[in-house]
Length: 121
Image (cartoon, rainbow, N blue to C red; front, top):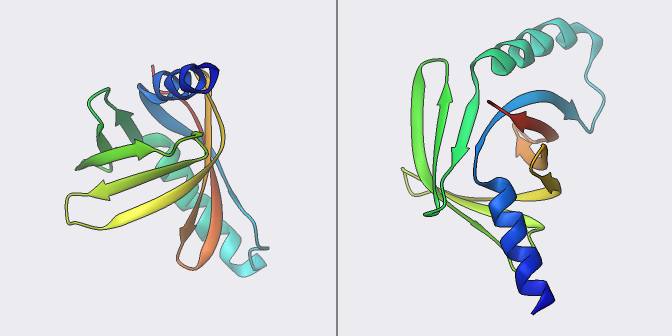
């Protein structure tokens, strides 16, 4: 019974709107690319918000573009699986999840990236 409560707590912690506090690449970024990458990160910090709803749906807003889909945590809340509007399924590894911090790892353009999220409001 205790494990069910902890899974519920994790889902409850996720259900809110999140914005990017930081992005960290696990591989070293070439010096020549750092300014462009930092500009992209700064743009995402200003424009990216993802909102998870209790019904298992999510909405992502980024640069005036809105995307929708479905989400589901695995049994121990260590992974989130999302199904996008266009039918793609993606798994992300959750490294931290509580009401004030949400961190997950994703593969973006062949690079592993850790997203550090904070509540958007």
